[in-house]
Length: 227
Length: 295
Image (cartoon, rainbow over all chains, first blue to last red; front, side, top):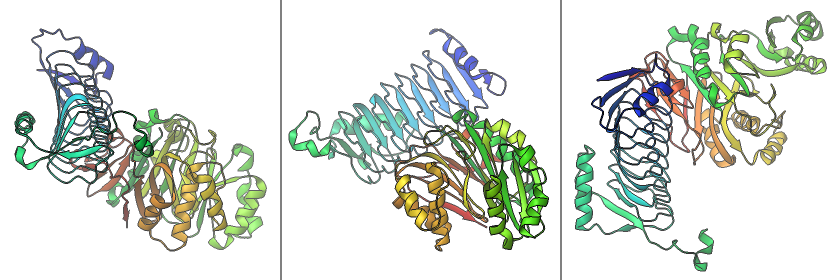
């Protein structure tokens, strides 16, 4: 295990070290100590590393992740795993706004709560939140799955495209063009896999599915008042 | 952006360290706004009234001010000069006369109260903390701000915290959009903003609601109905500390509570050096939800 202490190592050096690891490196286990809320911790990784961040991180933790597994033992600020391509990001605590925003792939797991705009404009990422999510989550979500074991705030899935939203608790309100949809066998199967990979103790049958009514895809003069 | 911090101590043993802790919190937020910085700190209550004064030419303005003010208001005065600021203590009954005298002299009054003192200037938090020796100040609670200016000029008067009534202060991250009209309404109620700044209108709003008899919680609730725009506010009163975010809540906020204190920061970084933070309850305040503590 390689240890990088942010109390003594500059942030950019830490990221550069992690980013410089070759794809076939045998130094895969890394620990980042003393993040103390620093921004952009463990970003832009593109190798099969296992990075543990001991403590809480600030903005944009594990952004643009590819292939790596990043585990944060504390909480994270806004924009965790923003634009993730692949790999896994696990947050043991809470996440602030726009967790997993614009993510193209990979799995983001938040063991606590996520606040507003979770999964905004998601493009293929899978997000599993063990707690609840705030308002405007999955706004303009295009692809991927958002699973919430707790409750969802106002305007869930506003202007959603083809992402799937699964909520176990209550949904305060749905946004424009978001509707509840039937849970089919393939969805239960998908959920079972996601819950298992996200270390989540819940049954697929307990969830409801939400998605796009597909009424806002094209301009329709009857919808003019909605714009 | 702007960075805001607040610290409300529950454990008396920490009171001598208030200025030190607040300074570290605010300095950590420096890269959220380099234009100006300020801290309002609630120290020991005094018998009379404290006015925090500011002058761009303190060498001349504060020289002999104590005697001149004493003669003008015919009451005893103590004066403590700290860089561009001075804290003058005088009997409550002499407040009107003192304000008239200071206005004539062109000396600005940044705040008034039995406990609160305000120090704010153009510059970085580190410079402001050093110039005013904030670290040496003890007290019960305080709030701080580092500014990235959007709505009005980068001047001392445009810096936060704003104080618009005795022992009340407010810092703000965000920008308001109905402050001009609200300012006119508040002026009719006797709380006319003195600057063009949107945040001062929010401070006037809270002061007017408190003057009407609202408690701190109700006054903060009112901002959700009556103020339009983006805001995370942190407010201090003589014995209270409150936080509210607008319903959209895009301006960041993190809070922490232990048996010893309640703390607010724009980011967790600001809280990371507080004693016992590892075991604190840390959470993001909910949108459109009022949090307040009073002793």
